[in-house]
Image (tube, rainbow, N blue to C red; front, side, top):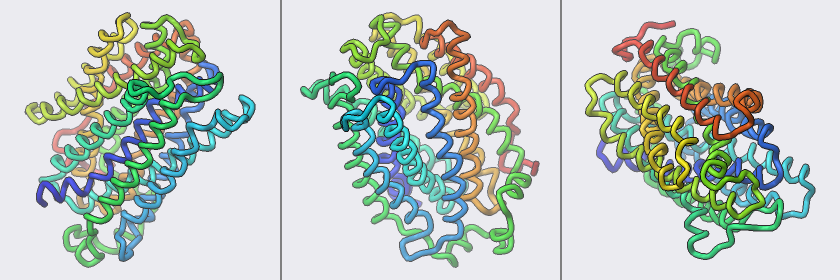
Length: 433
């Protein structure tokens, strides 16, 4: 496929990632503003991965069996994006409807559940489209393009609140109400999301069943016979070994998303009170740091192919990310915080590109690509659920300081970097578990 065909396959991911960045960058801020206690904050983060582990295998399995004139994966992509747009207009207004703190938190939880369900429904088809329509030789390039668009969307989504504050929108609001900078970030992000998805759905024409089978020669009986348990039993060993690395990576990321706003506000501004202007300024600056992380990830992604040893590239990237996490509590100046986030970006680049490249190559000839990728998403969701359940307890064990949770995340990344070396060389020919 030409570069632009590969680009069109993933372009809608830019808009989906803006939505995802707005969610991951602002959820803790929104719920802290609504009145959530820091020790229970991680429980609000259970819903996103829980929805992911439920939705993505279902979307993968159903879309494997779906053939319409609109395509195989694209109908799920479009419906997911449409629902996400509607919910993005509701979630940041959870504190604006005159409800009590408890009611506002419940409303926010329901909106978050619907938002993450729809984002997952829109996100998964992009990975499947690459698995369906790109040959093994070009997969690394295709996922690299997807990684670039993912990071570009992240930069835009993360920087929106800071940008809107810079042009004059209010960054403070009444107690329990989310500032206009966040509300308008979600509005504009929703508009970009639907435009990007419309572009992809108009440019990409999925193969009809006969042509699909010509390029994906798997027996019909094999495509139709297996349930999820059977698929997991037959999964290549590489599927599970990469999943072990994923566990420690995504647990660390969950702790960053949950606690980093408070950690930076505590380290740099000396407060964790969401009612203060300093806290809201810290939250905006965290968005800028997330954007810097994404830009660092783009740069590092261009350097990863220079490593001759794939496992070494993967492991080194995660070690750099671990150093970044551990440095956050030791950088008392907001500009010094740029260094840790650039290092975290190195680990993030490897997390985005390498697991799916390794696993999809290992899955060639197994069939059920959509179902397998949906199940592989469990290696992203399960660790986040486990980390969220344990978050409050770990926070208490490290002295109730959110900044200490960044060190916990760093240690988790170090464990992940060691687990990389359990992955077999030549994943394409990995044996069945």
